[in-house]
Image: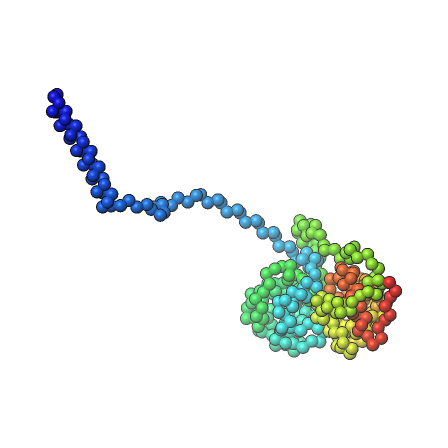
Length: 327
């Protein structure tokens, strides 16, 4: 192969390279390169399996719930649910949008005097047993379709038990609670293992009762009296009417269970004491322990300073207050 042929081959290769390069440049100018903002194919990482929901705890039998129920919480729940807008609950109270509820536990269904019940409820028959009351409170419209009762219902079994326990106290002779032993042993054991809230006075203040009362604050006691809900059951003005509980004017120094016109429980009537500062303090710690079987549904006041202030306030409800003790 001579030099001329080699030159021709080299020239051909060079021209081809230049043509290829120029074609690429022209292509870039005609169709500019663009970059995607997002990947055309979205690849999701594998999702972690959702944790399994914890198994719901089995609902305690009604007998167990009632044995552990707190009537004071029930009274608060009754008020919070708006029941007081339709029902009175004192002995002899008037019917409203709904019937008076005094003595409801154990009473025949739709038997409240002077109240016009719906045909749906009047046709139920039977009595307001604990079981019937619980079923009613779950959802009145399901218990008696066509009832006049507009309340939607209460799903929380503990809150229902607390309200029923409070309704039970609205009677001179509260109906006996159901026997807990009838419930499943394992469930009863689990309920029994739940610690009860302590009613013992906190040891923070080591002052004696006399010192606490001597230095007590009647205004703070009145505020606590209101906050604790005592006014829902008691009047405190001179000559005030009895309600769910007796009028409290002049109670300090008065014989227990002696206020005129009020039907006391046999448990409190049997105490035969005067409402001294010591007796009132013992009562306020836990009424149910002071007089087992009392109608008083309040759970008690653990704080000794609050008790002392309330007693000092009660002392002020008198034309001639009892002398304060010596610290």
